[in-house]
Length: 293
Length: 341
Image 1 (cartoon, each protein chain N blue to C red):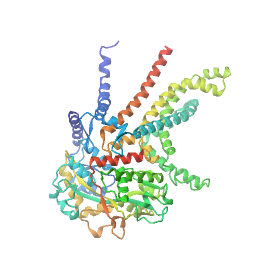
Image 2: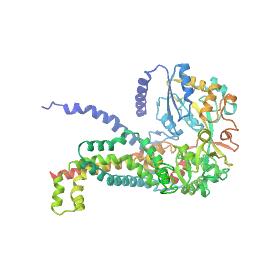
Image 3: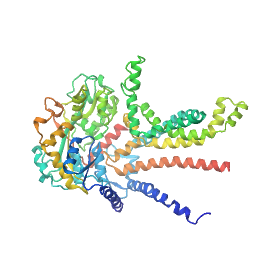
């Protein structure tokens, strides 16, 4: 028995919260991105496309408006970083999730619990832990030189590797869990069938297991890729802050650069990228459903 | 404006409900670890006013928060150029600072400064300098010029740490090159950019977090830093560091206590300012914070003297940062964005 209007009224609180905490703030960001910057930060409600123009063109050292790819470079670099992080997470997650899925009973629960454990600790603390591990006289440098394996390895911090380690560490649980969920559902009979049909280990992995686990991997990839796009702390603390990422660029606009509308415009571009990923993913899923139906 | 006032109304409502909990409160928004906890406790005991503190690590953060409106704070501690901007932007409460007992404690040379000529809004709180600190285990050479920092000798190559605040790093480069702060001259700023780009291969990290560990432990050899902080790790932690006084000068800053417009506890804020300016308390604060005090302190009880703490007594020119015009600031941003590109 379905009560009339139940769907509407039942969902109303959730809809209102979405409207108040999601749609309206995003609307404000979009509005600010089309406004005019104030002299000392802030903004005025005067329509302007300047912020979007600034993404591509800026006044050069010779006082002429010229094409300036610096912001595109930052956006490109950020996407590359997020994609690399996602790829490494995937490489780590698949065997890890497979291993967990193969365990029995209690052990499986404990392993899954361990995967989620880092989430109970603040992200900043986790990044600082890596400072201690990778730093000069830190866990790695200290241990290796005490054992006499390497003399004076020094600091392993402030490079792209350290930044990636931090990002992968932060986000890998977001990949392991959905991948685990899809491996868990895997029918062992299918693997057996593959072997019966003379499918070797690799062939079974790539032709049987991987395609069946694809939904989990895609979900994990989305979960990792999106927050990686907005990473601020890892590039600054572990990477040494030598090259700007989109997150730092936005942060600067509300600080030193005193250009709120441009900060909002970069945020809108970032949001656009995230939405593009989500929409592509949704379209793919819809097509898949249509095919199987 | 409609948007902004609805936001304001919402925030005020939130603020009101939280204020209902305690009758007398004071919400302080200050530099991280800047106010002596001992004094906060003492003030709470003496007056019965409950203090809530929140901290920031850059002037820009403080400005942005006040600009967003209805921050709920009663007391903020911006540096001189940001006091000027906040006054000009109408973000501060006129507290007639010149009529307050605290004002009488202020050293004459810090009265009627360009950032608050009539002393309507601010009482100076602490001042200091920004220069660079070297780790003497890593680098043993002279530190009498910014050249060591910007065109480092071999021992320091790859071991330089700049500030992650473009304003700070660019000011330092300007001192070295003799380019005036807040210049609107593109050719001059291009020189600054070229210097920073040439320095970049030798820079290990651009950061203002966790500096003490990094320079004290020798992770880097030279780090852009502040006088009092460098003093504290040398004195309290026995780090083998030296704070440089380059002949081209150091960057100066003066933090003042101001009351943001819309504060609900103006009187409590003024009480706190007066309290902090009493010589007894100012001395405790000086010994805790290790930055120079613009208000009178009790000399005999001061922990830092020219003999024990040369960091606090510069013998080179001190150039105070100014409130740059939008045109000049645009150039600062341009340089920084190109260095960070």
